[in-house]
Length: 197
Length: 197
Image (tube, rainbow over all chains, first blue to last red; front, side, top):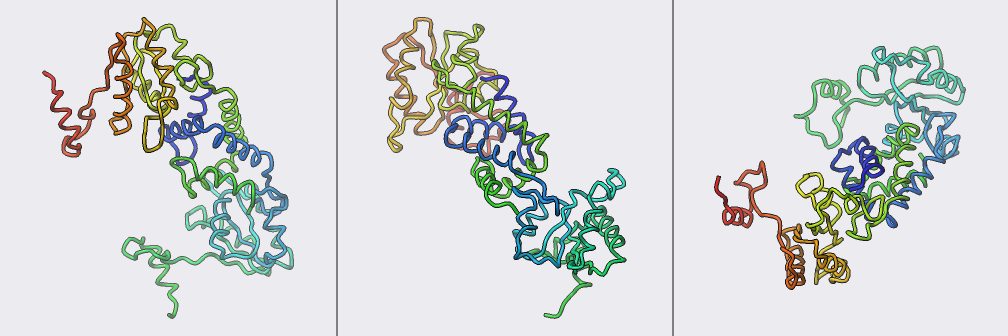
């Protein structure tokens, strides 16, 4: 059995999210046994991404271009900005196809506990973008957690003096979700925001 | 959202064993957001493995050296050869620490259905190794499947004219396994091979 390089690779893979020692070993075996068809193409792909991905100077999205393909897309509405915590949230919203404006990726949430301050989240850049007279609405698509709500309040205070309309995502019953397993907070929110059929 | 390179990477990751589109996306996000601490070290590790792994000319193990570190280890017993189907089986046996001899990796099993013949498994090389007067035992550590048993029979026939002792792994109750969920075949085998306490 090989020592260093292979074991090192397994250890690194085992630390990735969703993987553990067993699946890392399985992956490594798979890669070793298919060097030409799997390992080398994967390596090329990872190298390409590592070399070409950059942060968008406008919205802090990660993309192959700066400004990113969303900021540069003339078909996206310029009047709407959607503030998200992470790239994962941006990807999720894009997959849903429900938002046609542009984004602002905070890269985190305000947190007294973790000592994350407005300067750490590029909030100044967001306020600058909000000052653009073309921006009419800012959607705060932040999680319904303590830090998410703290950040949303901070942002809505910081934007209070502008003309921009501030909105947040609706709370409610997830589509396909059963009421019986839903937590009380969501259920109350869904009841309060009930709508005519 | 990025098109080509990132999507391509996600597609490739999603095809790896144990991963799917969701976990591939999660992995990619993790790598993108931690380029310096995760992506680049992983890339270096994969590159090192891709460049340095080779097949052992003696036992067909994959290792950084040829002959592999097991074949080259003077502390391993030279009198015992353990025949395994795959590298995964070799790794599993090494983890168990139960075998101190050397291996022979077939890289597959005889299969009329899949048209895998003795030539495809390097069986000639195994017979050559078995002819070494130092070899006293050959353990056929092959799966208890149709193809595994076919291959074991073929090998024991091919080795019948030699002085070498041919053995196979014991069948029985897995350690920690409950009888009630065990299949009949295993249970019968375990009963037939019962031993004094």
